[in-house]
Image (cartoon, rainbow, N blue to C red; front, side, top):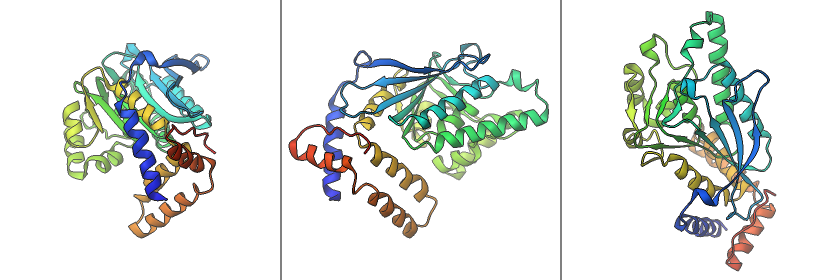
Length: 305
């Protein structure tokens, strides 16, 4: 049975990779634009339809759009992010989430330091605590998440990207955690997620010095999964999201759960967790559909049931 599933995944994956992904093949449908009363329109949530997928599932895209501050995160933008991630969590048809920027050559410059200067210490603590919990919520989303990074991703911007499952950046991207240069430390997960991605020694180097690294260097140390030519990060993210969207929704959720929770456990307990997650899929309609599609040499049509 396991071999059969592997064969299904390999077959579908190879078909998807052979296709040239064109933006013109994508139909963009606005799912919801977040305008929070007097808040800015700096965070938008869109739904992308994948015409090649037979599934009744969607790729969702959160777009950062605050060009006047290079997408720096202030109070209003943070509220927008919170609402967007909550909406994604509540969208039953969501199968993949992409986080991108609508601002050229910028992913996110980090916190809005001009706004930060107006805050008293207690307000700073409240803001950073909310930012941290927002990224924890993002990390815990039940669907795969992809950050598409073009240009700068600094401080909280990089912390947001590190909260995603997969990171893609352009070659000219600039990534870093410069907080020690401001006499503080990363406060929204940077000191914890960075060493888990690149190792303790490299994380200390980057955080102690606050130095910025290029997209190519980020790829070489494992901070990002893919480094692509400048300007092509979102296109690569679309390609990857499209590939993922053709897989079984319940299987994706169980795979994410097994990996995320399993790495925190010893191997024996982790294997028990894997077995539990596998068992949850045995009696699903999607599993039977996958086997039938493989036998009939057609694309499966998964409904998350």
